[in-house]
Image (tube, rainbow, N blue to C red; front, side):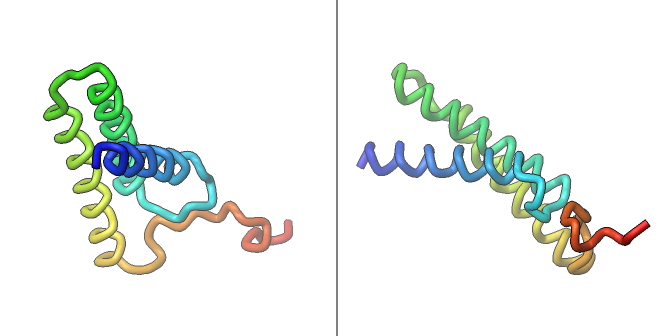
Amino acid sequence: MAALYILALLTVALVCALGVLHPRYEDTLLQRIGMAVACLGAVAELAALASGYDRINAHITTTLGAALFALGTAVKKWRGPRMGRRRTDKRHRRAA
């Protein structure tokens, strides 16, 4: 069971890091902050597991990141589908 938990934490950390750093992921600032906090919390949980420390603070950080991401998603859906979109694709740019 511990191996499955470690695999889940690694997945959360990797996917959140990719989501935060990838320029084409269409998200809001609150979603991006939530993913960054969740990534840091997952890495902190992995470090606490490896060294045998208490994981409660890292677990709270991971949960806070997930809550921020969920809140950002709710705000994005409430405000409309166009919120948070960036024009990073060449096909969206107008010719000068």
